[in-house]
Every structure is written in structure tokens, then in C-alpha cells.
Image 1 (spheres, one colour):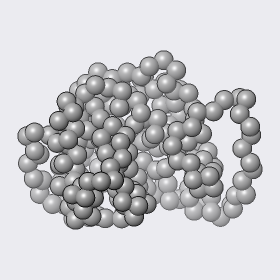
Image 2 (cartoon, helix red, strand yellow):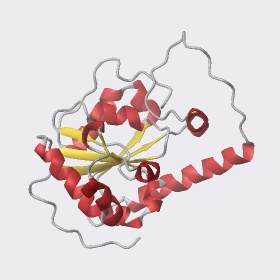
Image 3 (cartoon, one colour):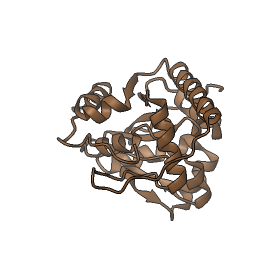
Image 4 (cartoon, helix red, strand yellow):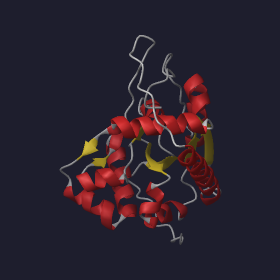
Length: 234
């Protein structure tokens, strides 16, 4: 990636942070927790290629935009200007901070996205990973099978999920891809305020984990009791 010189952040805008991760690492749960804070709004996958092809844009507070042609066009032509607009609209909602999810593969779709982030090393990065690579891979394959990517709570009385046919070579390739992607994120954003989060710790004690993010953003963060229950989407 080339690194551009940072433009002054708009004075009428919220500050930006980014959640960098792979699919099925608990990012939906994390975004939901962050959106409960009155000073924070967090979008989902702003640069999701499937949403781009469908004419949909993840926006403030988990909303989805379909009728703002100006924003849809900015996503294609000027990712920096789009993020500035996201931050301005977050500020108009009374938020101090605005975040979005950048999946590893989204960073490869358009290198201007990462360029924009690297140009401003003051942007905090939350690197969320799932150390149980097999559990992540199984969850990812189930999501591909069902096309259910959101958070779906489940309990012991729910019907069992159908068995999956897994290919050993595909699992090894996925493990290697995750290892390379995690190393890339740590290296690329090493100069930024970097918060390392793990899925299992987030699910077990969400309050402690989001407080670590709060320390980086200089806001008080906590999670309601019971918010760490696992879901099918994690």
C-alpha cells in the first residue's frame, strides 16, 4: 500500500475507529455492545462487496442506506470522503466516536481504504481475532450454507444443526490465510493505537473487553449483564 498524507479531519465530525477482523469472530456482538454507548455509533461492513453490488451501504448505528446516491457513489470513488461523511453524520447524532468493520478481505478490494487509515496513525484499531481457528471455520461454512450472517441467539432446546462435510485441505488453507491476515493487520497498523481482542474472552467477559476499547477511546465502556451469551453467528 502507498501511504497518502493525512488530510485534516473535519472539525464538525466524530473521531474514527476501526474494527479489523475476519468473518465469524464475534464482530456482530462487539458492534452491538458498542452501539449501546451514548457517545459511540458503529457501522457494520461499510465496504462489503456484496452490499456494494446490491446498492446497500452499512451506516451509523447498524442502519442500512439504499437511497443515498451521493454516499453510494462516494464508496466507489473516494473512500476517504465517505468516511469523513460517516463521521459528520455521527457527530450530527451527538456521537464522539464512529467506527466500522473492515474485514481482512475488504482491505484487498480497494487499497485506497487502507491508504486512508494508514495516512492517519491516530485512528484507533481494534483487532478482533478468534484463536480457535476450527470453530471459526465451521461457523463460516455454516453461514455460507445458510446465508445467515447476523446474530441469532440459540439455546439448548433448539434443533441440532445439520452435519457439515469439511475438506481437510480447505481447512489447512483457511488456517494459513487467517495466520497471514492476522500478521498483516498487526504489521500494517502497528503505528496506530491497537487494541487486541479475542472472541472467547469477549464472549466470556464482554464488560472487561469493551472497557479495554473504552480506554483507547477515552470513554467509559461496559457491557450489560448477560450480553456475552454466544450466538450462532459468532
